[in-house]
Image 1 (cartoon, rainbow, N blue to C red):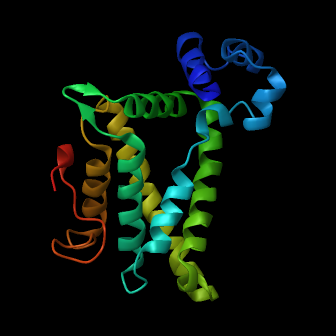
Image 2: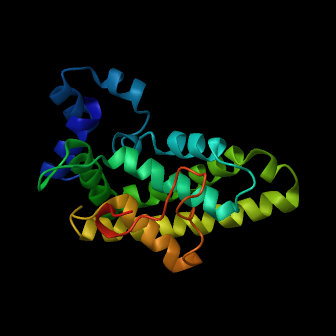
Length: 205
């Protein structure tokens, strides 16, 4: 609820022109309560469940799969969970909220800088979730490289999704970007045992 009010005010008034006290007043709570849940102003936009969802899906994937397939499948699945679907031609509330947050991240210099920190935190969460794949220095290096490459692809898909006003399925754009970067066979092939299948534009599988 606090984050929803913050994102609305940042969009209406501008990020720099809106204070934490403004957010607290709109949410009907004290500034201390806001800081208890969101330690910094940037967290009011950037805080989400993405890292946890990605780590959970990677941990549940088969260690026999290539690193990029495990990471890419987790990015697709978590994006689908966070962005929701459509009601007819309308965006769902989850998708509208994610799109608004993303636009704030792209357009606000302070948020772009913090987004880079979040990128490194997500990379560490991915490497940790890979478990034994990152147990020794050589494997850790491979895991870090794979995670960094996949997150670069993710960023490209997110920017395209924002430019497209959320009209396409985010998970489909991520899948399309992954196959453009790594080849058509990088995602779980049809009939495979993994949870992720290649997803085309507009969510077609």
